[in-house]
Image 1 (tube, rainbow, N blue to C red):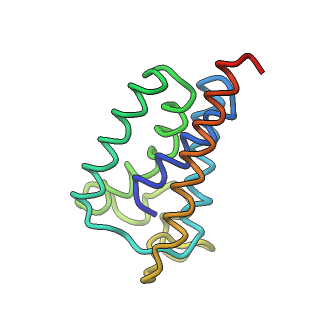
Image 2 (spheres, rainbow, N blue to C red):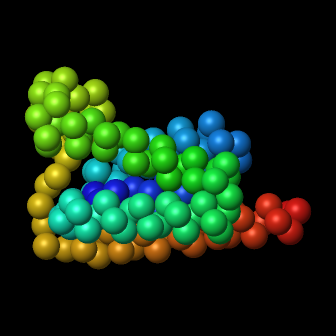
Length: 140
């Protein structure tokens, strides 16, 4: 799954989780869910640029210390080791996140030409983050 989708899905769940620590953990769990869905990846530089832009927009919209931003960071954090292995800083055997290891029950990076799951997850993440934000601001 792309960093962009991991960030948006984590933000959505983070908005529902409440506090920042719970939001970060919800984002972390959402990473495994996103990786479990067969998907294709976008070019790394494009993904990095879009993800950085979305994090900036989220920080402006919800606040940099919001559960949404914490959830997005939780959703992105496992890809730090994935990126480190791509550039040769760690070996595949050293990866800790289950969906990033070769031979795992949910291997990361299965390729398909179907972007529909990514689009749906991204839209769901945006919608849930916004609904959670509105619910908190209305005091409901």
